[in-house]
Every structure is written in structure tokens, then in C-alpha cells.
Length: 293
Length: 275
Ligand SMILES: Nc1ncnc2c1ncn2[C@@H]1O[C@H](COP(=O)(O)OP(=O)(O)OP(=O)(O)O)[C@@H](O)[C@H]1O
Ligand SMILES: [Mg+2]
Image (cartoon, rainbow over all chains, first blue to last red; front, side, top):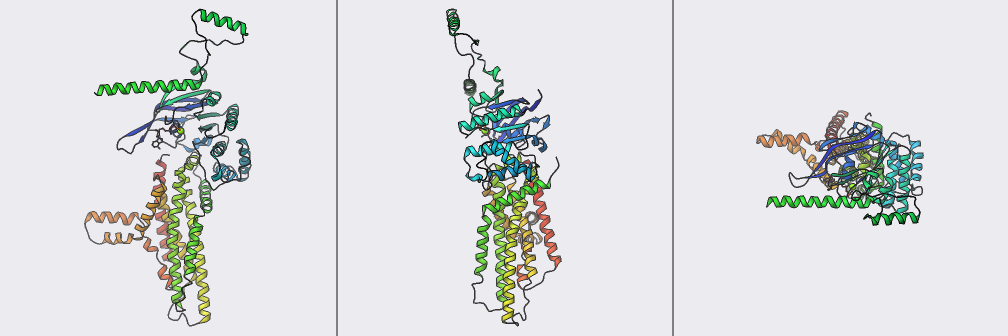
């Protein structure tokens, strides 16, 4: 599979109000995302997910390193013809209606007025807003804004969708619908990069994930690779009737083995990694302080 | 991908539509028309040229004042307000050049201001024409010794004001291209407006002899800022003077050059901006 996104040793520093101090939001991050995957970018608040996404869209410029999409620099705006972007907590022109917003964005992307109107109706239906298209965006709820943001990202059928927390503020049924939409997009051959805190949804949706903290990559890979419990070499046993299963369990226990569920959840992995990283950070900080004394 | 004027226009019209729906200009228009109508209430004038002069002065003054306020508020609100609300993130992630976005915002706000000033000039021209004819009907000798006000000059004044306000919109766009809050951009806009109104003082100080450091400072101030004083031709029109086309052409060129200058700098800063 072709490599669609390449983040090559990227660092992003933000200046802090204190002179000379900097905040490192992304720290020597390298990622490669293949086309036609659903890729999840995970991490606690402030770990640099949105910053990474903005770097990919050319909204921020990397302090070091470079970002490539399809082998081309993201500084060139024509790259973005093929990208749909949903920012986190989107907010749009309060005085426009949902339909007007979509028509405006479609026309900005070179679609003719008449086609734009048809497309807007179509997209509203796809995100479940067909009844709200005529209402002003100022009256939209949080989840509705999220949906219209998603609709807007789908204009022009881009091959790459970059969704910053697409499920935030959406109700469970809506989240399931959006999940189905994302799977549908993947089936159409699209690539989806998303950030989310809803780990069970991510687990169900993503082929690959990267977990970040403090701008650094903690782990990356396919869910199958990552979620094999590495601490105890375990087996998955399937298709046995209750009796045989019990016999195997007994044998295993009699031989000193332990029986548990094979795969850990993404939630567990996430918490484990973040906690471990925090611990090692505080250990190294304590060491530094020890050295300073 | 080529730079597209079509996209610029789309952004401009969307900006304009937003401004119209914000109904901001409506408030100012009502204010201005109210002030304007109240000038009719002063009836203790002698009928004659002085009443017309009063209406014209009042109208020109209102146009300049309210137009400037509207230019600053509208351009700051529509441009930096959009960045503050992070709407700009979505737009700038679309396949377009940042310069298209900036120019679209500028043209949209300027169009809004132009409509406002255009409406005021039209009202003023009609008011003056109505009074002029009725005064002449009542007393054909009323204008003896004084020139009547030419309606065409009133319209020309409006156009010149629109161009002057273009410079102000471009200045606010310049501040918005790097500022991070609407309040800052607006305050800078008002500051620069006042400074431009007083710019001729700096020019005088520059040409007059003083310390070299001050001279450089004043030279900078008088070149970087336009001289809004030049555009105050209302007094002369109110006295019935007919300004030649050359005067207007010179003013228009001056305004357009400064506008282009500010917009170029804004585009450079905006291209470097991070979101
Ligand atoms: N424009 C900016 N100026 C200064 N600091 C910034 C800026 N944008 C982000 N940061 C900082 O960079 C860090 C990473 O922020 P980022 O928004 O990428 O986090 P995130 O992983 O998306 O978090 P969340 O899950 O809360 O959305 C944070 O510490 C944030 O304060
Ligand atoms: Mg974020």
C-alpha cells in the first residue's frame, strides 16, 4: 500500500509569554500513514494531536522536520484539494444556514452553484441534518455543529479525511452513525486520520493507532499488534464446547498456568502506556532534581 | 493551482452577506440618518445658502465620522473575529491561497462600507436638492452672492470618502493579519484613524527644522500613514466651490496607492501567520 501521509521527524515549538521559553507541543514525531486505512491518533489532553493535524494542513509550520502528503509538501495549497478537514470544536458563521454554509464551501472548491445546492442537500442527509438545513448555524447544538462540520469535510469527495475529534459532543446513536459513515468511507477507498478520546469507538473503527504524550510517540501500530497482551504470553482458544474448555482450563491451571481473556482493550493499553510514561517521566525528573542537589 | 479572483469574490460576498445579517450597519445607518434628519429641525436659520451649507457640512461630517467607525468595526469583526472563533481554520484548510482569503475579507468589508457611504451620499444629495429647489421657489434671489451646492459634487465627495475608507479598511486588515484579538485590531484601527487625521502635523514637523531623530520619526509617520486631512474637501463643496476632476483623480490615486501598499504588507504577514 502506498504511503499517503509522511511526518518526518517533526518538532513544533510554541513561544511562551516568558521570554526565551518555549513549549514543545510536538517532539521529533515520525509517522507514516498508508492509504485506505483508518488511523487513530490518541493521547491525553494537550499531547499535541491537534497540533500534529494543523501541521499536516499547513496551518502551522514545523519548527523542524517536514510533513508530506502524497510525497508533496503541505505548504502548497493545491494539496488540500484532496483533503477534508474537521477542526476540533468547530464553529461556523452564525448567520448562515446549514445549507448556505455547505453551498459556500462547495463553491469555494470550484463546484458550480446549481450542483453545490444539490450536493448540500445530499450531504445534510448523509450526516442526519436533513431537517435542520434551513436553520441558522447560530442555533445549532454542539453535536449538530459537529455533524455539519463533517458534512463540510466531505465536500468534493476528498481521498483523505482529517477529523479532529469527530465524535465529540455527538450522542451515542449519532456516534454509531458517524462510525458507520467512516467505515463506509474506508470501503470507498478513502483514508481517514482521526483523533478521539472515545477509545472503545476508536478500537472498533481504526486499523492502526498512534498513542502520543507530551508531543512524543509512545506506541504505534495496528491494533492486532498493539493489543496482544505482552505481559503474559497467552493463547486464544475458540470453538470449543463447554466441557472441553473446562478440561483445558483445568489442565492449564494444574500445570501452573493462568487463564484470562486474551486481548486487552485499547482502553487498558492507553492507560497503561500513559501511566508508565508519566512514571518514567517523574522518575527521570526526580533523578534530575537529585543530581541538582 | 492558480490564484483565483473568483474565490476572492466568493469570500468577499460571503463576508458582505455576514455583515448585512449582523445588522451592524443598520444601527449606524439609523444613527446617521437620525443625526441627519435632526439637522432639519434647526429652523432658526435664515432661509438661504447658510441653511444648505449647514446641511452639507453636517452630512459630510456624519459620513466621514460614521463611515470611519463602521469601517474599523466591520473590518475588524469580520476578519479577526472569524480567526478568533476558529472559523478561519476550516476555510484556510480549503484549497485556496491565504492572499485570496485576506483580499476577500478586505473587499467584503469595503463593499459594506461603500454601500453605507453610498446610501448616505444619496440621501444627502436628495436633501440638498429638495431644499435648494424649495428655497429658490420661495425666493429666487436667495443665492445672490453665494454659489448653490452642486449635487454632482456631493456624489463625488461620497466616492472620495469610499476610497479614503478603503485605506482605513486596509489598515485594519493589516493589523488583523497578525493581531490575535478583535479588540486589539479595533483599538489600533481607531488609533491609526486619529493619527491619520492629524498626519499633516507630522509632515509639517518633518519639513520644519528640528532634531534629526525627530525628523526621521516624523518622516516615518508621515510616509507610513495617509493624510486624511487631504480628503476633507467637504468645506469647499459646501461653499459651492466646484472641484475639478483633476483634484478628485489625484485623491483617488493617492488612496488606491496607500490601500495597495497596506494590502501587500498584510498579505506578507498573513502568509506567515500560524493558526
Ligand atoms: N497556538 C498555540 N500557542 C501556544 N501553545 C499552543 C498552541 N496550540 C497548542 N498549544 C499547546 O500545545 C500543546 C498541545 O496542544 P494540542 O491542541 O495539540 O493538544 P491535543 O492533543 O489536541 O489535546 P486535546 O485532546 O485537549 O484536544 C498544549 O500544551 C497547548 O497548550
Ligand atoms: Mg485537540
